[in-house]
Amino acid sequence: MTQKIALVGVNGRMGRALVQAVQEDKSSLLSAAFVRQGSALTGLDAGEVTGFGRLDLPMQDSLDTSLFDVLIDFTRPEATMAYMNACVSAKKPMVIGTTGFSAAELTEMQAAAQQIPIVFAPNFSVGVNLLLGLVAKAAQVLTDYDIEVIEAHHRYKVDAPSGTALRLGQAAADALGWDLNQCAVYGREGITGERPAQQIGFATVRGGDVVGDHTVLFAGLGERVELTHKASSRLTFAQGAVRAAHWLAHQPAGLYDMQDVLGLR
Ligand code: NAD
Image 1 (cartoon, rainbow, N blue to C red):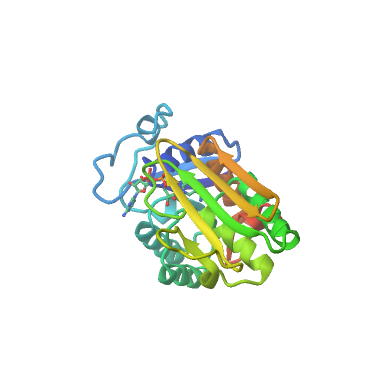
Image 2 (image 1 turned 60 degrees about the horizontal axis):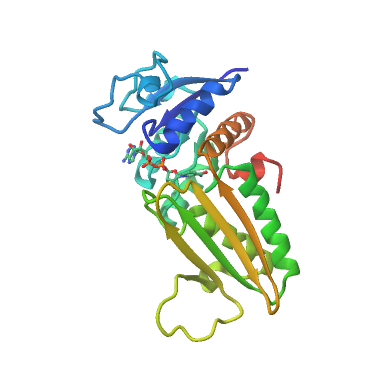
């Protein structure tokens, strides 16, 4: 059955990739395209603005929940929270790819997911979701190795470390029974002293147009293992989000992630 999918933040980098992914997916219909309140793009054709060619779909600046079966949101935390509340009121499922939420916002999302099904993932690519399992396995086998997560993204990214880097660190910490809040170190400077054993370090690189690189380094005495994923196109995230939207149609209320969608849990 064709699913009516709506997008918010259509003019963003991920919004453009999502227009392409929905258009290319035979079981999806791009039924509505939303931009932020008061945007100068309101009324313009979503396809023309995103470079996809005319779609006869004027962009709207106020969310109309009657126009879609599922909403896909890759925007900013404050915008996602507002769209999520509207979806809860209308009992519509939601796919959330936005990153950089505060602890309070994540608690709000958990409460919303008691009423509607939500897929929330810091990374919708199949490769990164496979990597999460590989990292957990490596952490269990490579005991006494130092774990560091290194990520690189384009110059426009506004949060650090990336949601994916944090999720990779979480996968390693969970596999070892560690509390990530206790063992994470975000960047180092000055006289840091020797590295304690029970620590997961995060290093962030920002520049140019890097779509998203992540490496989890396991450094032992005499050898290193590096598990790396490199995204070369945002389309991989967008296609994963569309796949999640279809999967959501058959789920009860709850908070899911891409591991659930791909059956990797
Ligand atoms: P972008 O800056 O290119 O686009 C952001 C979009 O959000 C724009 O369309 C903007 O108009 C809209 N927006 C911002 N504030 C808004 C508001 N208050 N109300 C309504 N709309 C608002 O960013 P991007 O590179 O497309 O990334 C968007 C988000 O997706 C980021 O959080 C990024 O980290 C995340 N992301 C996630 C994945 C994943 O797989 N989960 C992959 C790539 C990016």
